[in-house]
Image (tube, rainbow, N blue to C red; front, side, top):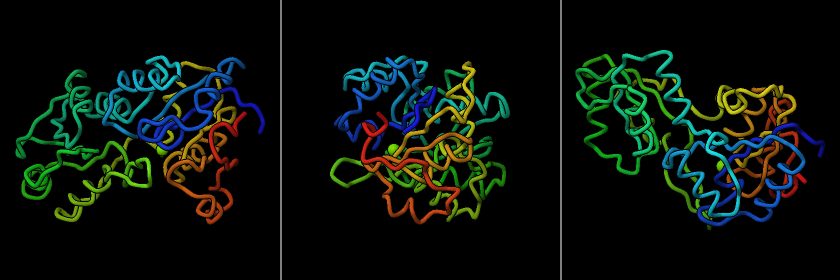
Length: 261
Ligand SMILES: [Mg+2]
């Protein structure tokens, strides 16, 4: 594989699975840093804050700085601040997302009569009453728009299991209201990759996006004009990659991240 100037890693299914580091992950990141390459980490999992990701990666033996981690929480907050600073947001979301919204000064509320944006996310405490609030805000009061932090159907777990992710909650709201989710933050939006490299001079064609999911990691890399490497340690398979149109396929298919070296 050719050398790139920057390497952007997905986390779940790429560097670790659950609480288990994947083979060669720590050594690969360390070796790339020693070569002088820029390294960034991008996850669509919003159940942890960037600070919690620093703690997890450090515990697993990967040295990382807070500024090197990007999640849809960051891109969601930034978009709302720029485009809808006065909106009242109803987050169906885990605590780190709600905290980030309130810390950024974005109004958060549960009254369907004043909600402007229903933000569907990866919420393990999703309930019928939350669905009712979303339904009332979107369908009954005909005022709220539906958005989502990330498009993932499920989050992979070790041993082949998984956990339903934001797409399940989006689907419940769409099915009951007839609304369509109009914006999804996080991968595969190429803005995520651009934000991950903000402040650097590295052009996107000198960047390698490394991930286990074709529909998010690889699609984002392709759309951003970056190099792409699919690792077969998580969600997508080599057969699924081969089924894609040639211009959507990952440039490299690797058994694991150590293949980068
Ligand atoms: Mg992944």
